[in-house]
Image (tube, rainbow, N blue to C red; front, side):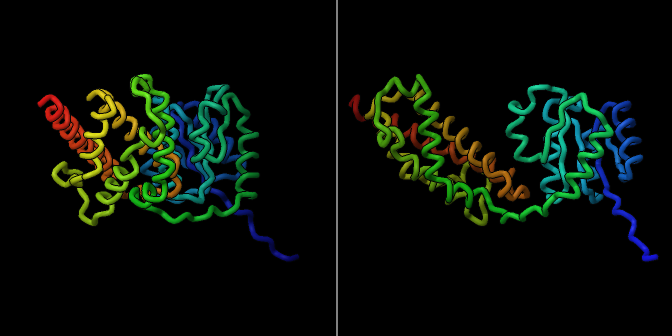
Length: 283
């Protein structure tokens, strides 16, 4: 007789704040041959993720706050990218509502479901799972640098949808104006080795100054300047959301704070230029 190796025991992190559901799933999965570590909260789950290795994550979406499961999935994706991630939700229309989460979770399972079938699903996916491709991680500055054209395009789409901004009729080139250069100035600040979130470190932007004067001549109001600046921030953060798989999360928070500060500084410079143009015109 040729000795055979015992089947590999896959380790599962099971996260659910409902004690009865968590216990039932733990017993069933262990009966199916899995090694199960259970967690009753996001905090407990994150502690396990940072101290242990897992083959599979199964987490409820709401524990008790909407999006809690997404937090756990994101942490697992960042810390252990090769782990299989399954998100459990009680909403029947979850496929459309959670389209963004599908970018992070391997599959969404809708309650109610048969726990025995869940175990079979996990086993099938673990056996057929291909190693994930390790993507090169990028700083926010790198992502925005290569996405300047798409940032401008998306900003323009949002601006055209704004009734407030469309009070002044402009062509696309007139509407975007100095926007590409403003984004480039932001990238320059983010790229500095000593970049900070302090307002005094904002880039002195000739584009922001010219932008304020141009908007005055085009008939913008100060409120419109503020509104289009808010659209820029939304567009920039949307670009980062679309590039989550490339982001270096260890540096994300300070970079996001720098974005907010730099866009605000650009708005201040544009507003000062706008007011100077208005005073010059009145004189």
